[in-house]
Amino acid sequence: MSDATLVLEVLTGARAGARLTVDLPCSVGRAASAALCLPDAHLSGLHGQLRREGDALYYLDKGSSNGSRHVRGKAISRLEGHHLEAELWDGDELHLGVPEEAVILRVSLPEPAAGEIIAVRPIAEVERFADRITASPTRLHVLYRHSASLGESTDLDAVLRVATQLVFDLLPKATHLAVALKERAGRFPVVHAAARQAKHKSSIPLSKTILRKVLDKKAGLLVTNAAAEFSTARSIVQAGIASTLSVPLWTGADVRGVLQVDNRDAPGLFDAEDLEVLTVAAAHISFAAENARLVARLRLAEQRLEGENRYLKTQAQAQTFQGIVGESATMMSVLQMVERVRDTRVPVLILGETGTGKELIARALHYTSKRADKLFIPQNCSALPEHLLESELFGHTRGAFTGADRDKKGLFELADEGTIFLDEIGEMPSSLQAKLLRVLQEGEIWPLGASAPKRVDVRIISATHRDLEVMVKEGSFRQDLFYRLHVYPIALPPLRERREDIPILSRYFIRRYAREFGRSITGLTPEAQERLISYRWPGNIRELQNELQRILIQRMDGDLILVEDLSPKILGQTSLIDGPQIPRGTLKDMLIAVERVLIARALRENSQNKTQTAKVLGITREGLHKKLARFGMNY
Image 1 (cartoon, rainbow, N blue to C red):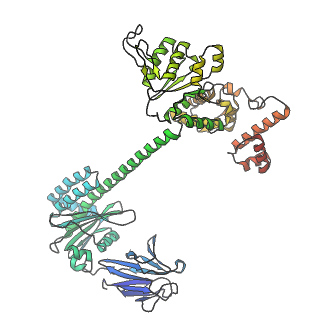
Image 2: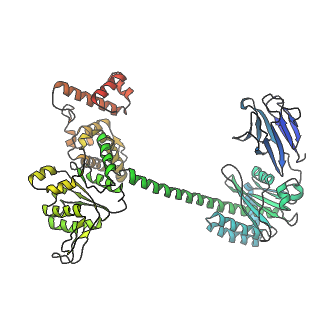
Image 3: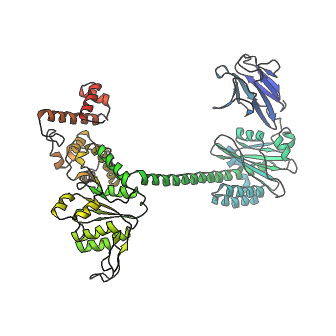
């Protein structure tokens, strides 16, 4: 059978069951003039054309009305319109016309004539013939020497350069080589080509015919007279390839590439031993090339990850509030206030009971602002006596007081262009209040013992749990300082006013301390959660944090925190009627409050599923919605 002929099996359509041998090029269509006439009504008169180009076979859709599809295994590609073609391999299918009634042609490529492939060496047998290299000390030494270099190369180009020298040293009769590596789409483009002598052309278009045979057989092939045996293969003829060795590059059972080695001087210069040697070398090259490609992918992934981290860091600084947990309306309002004021120079006064998270809000103001790359310095004004606090905040010069043996920068100077957080500002002595007022008004600090002030650009955030207005009336806090600090107050709600956040905060602390202490606890029982929600939490979030931390230290096993794990002070409040959510008043008001608590609890227990909640409560879904609207419960 000639390379200019082709066998087609008609699997469906009017000529189903026919096995046809056609000459190439071959027109395909409904018209009687088509070389392959398929009298199916949904095909075009001239539907497509089969042709050979060099050693490759192609099908070209000629602008048919209902299109063509090329199928290889599970891969399907649509071919519609002029100049859209597909290369055909043995066993491929062409689906012509309307997809539901497609005429299917299966392609059978002619087998090569006897004697074309002189030797075949399957990669599965590489260990068997690798032992023969030991009979050639010279080749064994060459393989050892270059294998060491291959193992040290983590760059694909470097691997291929070493592989080139290895092949040319192992095969003195080789004049050219080319390496094709598999891409995701299943193509094998040439990624490297080389010639032994610089004066020779190094480009080698791999023979698609030989490539297919290597892939199909998963074996190395020896062709001793390529020009004669593949006379219709344009790539071989144009390149002047006389004899060739072509071996797979593989990992496991997967062929990852092909190495083709040629001689362009004379046919019959390679033998079966050369094929075996090259196949063994290919095993080493395959490993090194795959490692290099893996390293390249890891580097690319690392670069992407680094870029993503930079992006996420920027996003985190701009949009997130680390450590602030909660979804209640009051906390959302607080975070909105933070977003509005974070990039201004306006002093912020954070108000709230002890343990409500005032320093977390201060950090959020700093780390989501344009000052985030500068220092955030917190200082508790009640933690030091007056003379030490003054030195700590404003600094001092050498000799300013007994023990001042050197100059010291104060926290305001260290926080220049950044943020200073003055916690418990209500505890600041009146003498230091005047110095703080100067910083706010003039942007200047006056270190102890200094002869001149220093300019600073500091964002001041202060916080207190005390009522500063009452302190102003009592004369214990400067009125002018109060108005300077009270420009933009942010009031943090106590935990008892944001009870819907208690389950969220509890899960956050449980996950945190379970990791830290190596515990398996993942949550709370519903009863334990109810007790936490109904407790007043005078110490607010800090008290809740301490409670859960204590429990996870004590509990060595188990998945859930039980009611009996809770502190006696939390367990002491057992009655729903005595709970803080039930106000004193008329019977009607108290009943409404109790109903509200019961509905909220039912919603939590049913994961906010209103249909299920209504079913559990024995009311309709519409009735539940009316109650939620009446009670102002936005679920």
